[in-house]
Structure formats: structure tokens, C-alpha cells
Amino acid sequence: MRGYRRGSFTPTISPRGIATQTEENIMPSHELLTHYGVLIVFINVFGSSLGLPIPATPTLIMAGAAIALAAEGFSSAAAVFGVVLGAAVIGGALADIVWFHGSKCGVLMPRRLDMSDKLSSLGRWGVRTLLIARFVPGLAFIAVLLCGRRAVCLRSFILHDCAGIGLWAAAAMAAGALSAPHIETTYAAAWQFIW
Image 1 (cartoon, rainbow, N blue to C red):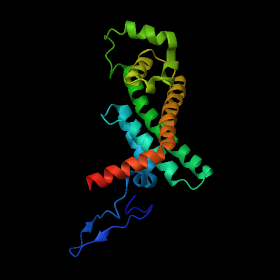
Image 2 (image 1 turned 30 degrees about the horizontal axis):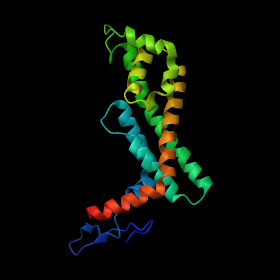
Image 3 (image 1 turned 90 degrees about the vertical axis):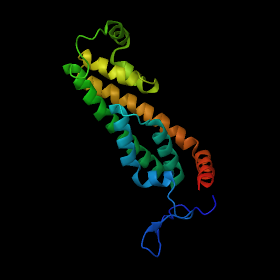
Image 4 (image 1 turned 90 degrees about the horizontal axis):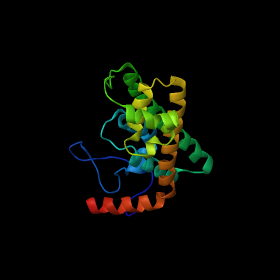
């Protein structure tokens, strides 16, 4: 990449005292994720799980790529991968617990709503549906509501929900780590085109 050095973000000050950005000192998104990745992943997964229209998978893919690009060794990459994975699991589980308790009390999903056909499909697989729910668009949201509606044990819900979120986040981050060189090249080309 022309004009890019890893870790070279230093703002320049113009004569008027305003920080300007030049091609040499703009922080690419994978460096931003390297510095603030845990917080960004936590907020993104938490917001996405609450129902905000922000996709979490692209953030997890970029986080995996950032970890792979910034890693100095396998052990440091594995440690950072685990911390970011933990942030994703905690963020997703906290939001799902809100929906779980809301639907259990009937606040977020009215009790008079006819859910017999959906309850029967959840009855076949039970709380294990949460293990694959994040991989199917929309299923995670419905499965959490139905688990609350069926009064699934909170401990079982948290265990299966955290395992499902962990599988989903690990798969997305692994995909980003495996395609990190391609993501960096594509990002550099797009960045030169934009600026």
C-alpha cells in the first residue's frame, strides 16, 4: 500500500491548529479494530442482538482480519482472538437475556399471540436451536423469544445461547483471519479510490 505504514497514525496540525488527515496518517479500519476492537465488537454485537439495524458479522470478519494482520505470533493472536470472542459472547448474551426475560414476562411478546406452530418447531429441537440460530437470519431473535415464552430454565438458556454465539462469532472471525491478506488488499485499493 502506498503511503501506509502499520502503526503510523499521527495527526498533523495545520497552521490554524486543526488536525488534518493525509494519505500517510489515516488509520485504516483494521488498525482501528486493533486498538479498540474489544469495545467495538461488544457494542456492535450487543446492538445487533437488541435489534438495531447494524450487522455484526462484517465487524467480526474485520476483527478476525485485524487480529491476523497485527499478530506477532500465534500465542498473542490466540489470546486476542479469545478476548474479542469473549466480548462478542458477552454482548450477545446480555442483549438476549433482555429479550428472554421480556418475553417470559409477556412484556415484549404478548401472551395472547398465537405461537402454537412456532412452539411446536422449537419443541422438537428445544433450546438446542440456539446453537445454530445465529447462522440463520432472523432465527436467533425468534428462538430467544420462544425460549422465554416456553419458560426455559435460565441456566440452560444462557449455556446454549453463549455456545451458539461463540460458534457464530468464532466462525466469522476465523473467516476474516483466513482472508486477511485479501481484505487488506481490497481495503487499500478501495481507500485509494475514495481518497
